[in-house]
Image (cartoon, rainbow, N blue to C red; front, side, top):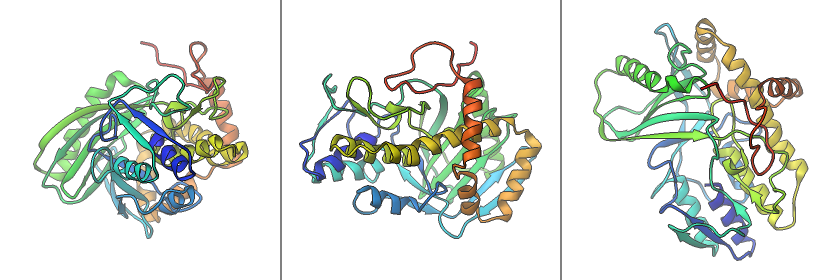
Length: 353
């Protein structure tokens, strides 16, 4: 995704661009499932931001204003927002975010080489995550469910994470995501699936496909490595650490890298648009992991009484105090040894086996 976006922006600027993809049709490890384009991230609407980055037209998204949050004690809390609090989109193939970016890159004159490894002298690296700093197990299926956006917050079921079930236009994605206690992920998936079944009743599950995803979080000091190459998206460690919603950050990194290749490197913009929000997400992740079951239930009740997007915007504002807390947390959590990646970014210490 971030590689295709970078290619489209560079080709539109008149650069001769070749894209090397090991896969066909884009999407990589995400084939057909729903993902989230976060619209609760300051400072503006996500679609307006994509336009400001130089991407043309409207991506194939579904705006969402409502969701049901499930608390640990059986409670259901409906949240709403006046403006979409998020946009849902699919990954891989026709009608996906990847397909939209692919069309832009090709229309701008980029050459796409699929089922092909990149040469060693490629200037931009967009190979996805390098290590598992967070893991999700998902089931993608077709269903007769009505449009549903449901999220479960229960640290007894999904410690350090959450579970979700999205069904839009008959296409469904169920998953659990965690950053710690990864050995408990299979049990968490079974327990969360049972809870959603109880909440929603019987529903069809057709064309079921299971997959596992993972994310890398490693806020780098810069997007250009000592080897002179540029890194985008999760190849650079770019990710939001609270819920792992990385699409907006990945596309921001594509714009920054395209400008860098064109000789317009802007480190101040990188700090403002990526590094500071990433540091703020570390502080939010620390607070999230401290919450107990009663605190999650209270948060669900509060969210149901507020405009959900406004609540998200306030929570994700990268305040100075939050960045200061993040530096303390990062020092406590830091990996003591091992590879720090091509850009020297921070990694959280792995759990003991």
